[in-house]
Length: 146
Image 1 (tube, rainbow, N blue to C red):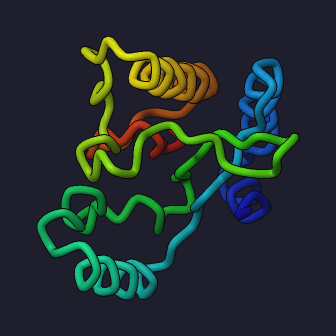
Image 2: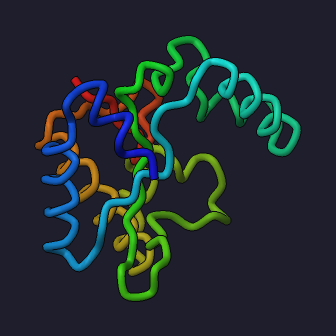
């Protein structure tokens, strides 16, 4: 978890603690999957993801123009189950890249789709209420500190 550098750069320690507190009220924890990513790492990750998933899908989920993680003010978060010590899925991996974007599950009527939509909406609402904004690519898990 990359918490300390984020705190030092923008004083977000209390902010991230408030986010985690809201998650705890729902029986979860907020886990920072990714925080600061230097430019050289952007290049390496882009290359590796492009080889594995193709350049088109990689460009859809990696903002190579702005590189927001290089600012030290961006985080990718996931909900975490403290009892099982595992990530709580907020999407079906089988749904691919499109499921990484806001409202992919909005029109779904099945219970699983509704659960993913509710979880994503909770994540977004909590982050927005604590001084973050949604990233330019509109991923449900990527937030930039204002």
